Each structure stands twice: as C-alpha cells, then as structure tokens.
Length: 336
Image (cartoon, rainbow, N blue to C red; front, top):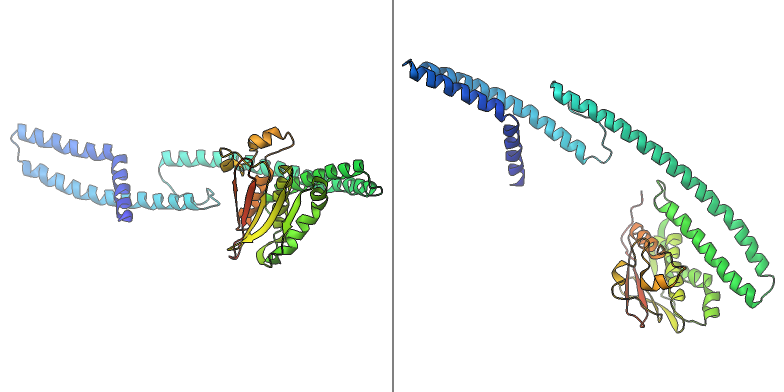
C-alpha cells in the first residue's frame, strides 16, 4: 500500500512540475473551440484534432514521466548509499538540470577538499597526542620507582597523585582510539574475575589509604568482551566509587543474568543528575563540588560499552550510595 501511495505521489509531483505545459495545451484547445463556435464552424474538426494531439501528448507525457521516474529512483538510491558520490548522477539533456549538476560537482569537490584537510589535521593531531601519551609514561614510571625507594606518608600521597596522572593519560589514549578508523579490539572469552582483580590491584593502595572495605567474592563467570577495554570501564567505575566514598565499603557482585554490579556507600547522586551522568562533560552537583571532576570518565565508559555490545546503567540516592551495573551481553560482537 505504501509503495502504491509513493508511486501516486511521484506521479502527482511530476504533474505539478509540468502543470504549465499541460495547462497551456488545454487552454489552446478551449480557445479553438470558442473561436469555431463563434464563427459557426464545425466543432468536430477541432475535437478530432484535439483528440489526436491529446493522444500524442499522452504518449509523450508517459515517456517523459518514465524518464523522470528513472532519474528519481537513481537519485533516491544515491541518497541511501553510505559513501555517496556524484559519479552516478543520472544523465540529463536539460540545460537547467545540467547547470544544477555542475554546481553540485563544484560544491561536492569543495566539500571533499575540506573533509580531506580536516581528516589530515585530525590524523596529525591524533598522532601527536598518541606519541605524547606514550612518551609521558616514561617519566611517570621513573617517578614511581623513585617514590617506591622509601615508604613514607608523603611518598604515598605523591604515588596516589601520580596514579591519577597516569589515569588521565590513559583517558587521553581512550579518547583517541574510540574515534579512530582502526580499532584494536580483541574479542574473546575472558575470565571476569581476572579483569576485576586487575582493577582492584591497581586501586589497592587507595582502598588501604582511604580505609574503604572491599566486599568481593569470585564471580566465576566468563564474558565475551575485550579485556583491555572492559578493564578500563571497571577501573573508571572503581575510581569514581573511591572518589565519592568517604567511609564504608565498595561491593563487587554478579547479578543475573550476566550483570556486573559495583555498589558503594558514598554520597550518592542527586535525582536530577542521575539521567545525565553518562553525558560528555556532565559533572552534576557532586562533580561541581569536586573541582578535579572532568565529567569524561562515565561518558567514555558508556561509549566503550556500546562498542563492546554491553550496557551500563546507574541507580543512586543522595546519602545512600551508588550502584553501577555493567550488563555483559553474550551475543557475538561484530567489530569492523
């Protein structure tokens, strides 16, 4: 039914475009009829000529409509293509249409030049920041070794700040890789406990320093994912939980079906902020009170989960803590 309506709509559109020519033909026939009637001439001659002209005009109209419909369908297919180009523009013998196509080719050429230049600049910028991120890891590792030589309260605090710097560097690399043309996903079955233990190990000193209790029992689950990217998500969630939990505990459990749950007893999230915490740059009331909040961590978690065919959600109440759930899909992931 929809296809029939579309055909009718296309035909009426064609008729509207050529309404002037059709109207002029009808008007001329009426003029001849009026003149023949005024001079008492036989109207049959006019009607016979009008019928012949009308029949020939109908044939031309149908032929013209077929050409119009073919061009319309070709343009529709071009519109639906992902990589649209102007190479498949339908041929035209109409001077005005030809002029429009020339203008389109000029505009398309300018657009392609702008896109190519933008991609070149983005590639250079990405390469620069990627090199910078890898180079800065060297002095970070050196400072870690220097601070580990002596276990003092000052060195512990400096070590925590250094880990924060390292976390921000990793976030820069994640931002660069997320929108890259090439990906480094390695999708396979991974032991979820192995990923959780890596994340907990990276923040073990913060648990001890902040005197936050960790409640975690092995989940004994394998998950279809990318180990490195999922580890980043778990680390970001743990980092937020530690940041906003002044006292109490952080619990890591598995909820059915295949949902990793990280629950803290922190300050919680305001109801008006909760729907937007995964938006880019949104910090909410708690984030604004914490001047170090960037509003980028949970946004990256959401983007990564989408790439991995996972889903991340949050539930919270002020003063009652926050629960982050990572829904781990078991469906096969197609990575380009």
